[in-house]
Length: 65
Image (cartoon, rainbow, N blue to C red):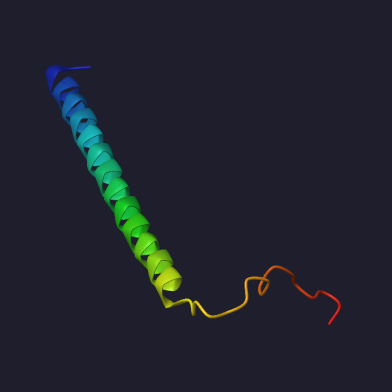
């Protein structure tokens, strides 16, 4: 290998590492956004539940129907 090939290889490896870091950062950000949205969705479902239902409702599922 000559000097140009070694320099090209080093540059390529550095670019690959940077791309990997950017990809991981974007993945973590997407996961954080998904977590925030799912938390908001769960909270909105809890807030919209009618409080006047009897406590026994929803405890069993009729699987023979």
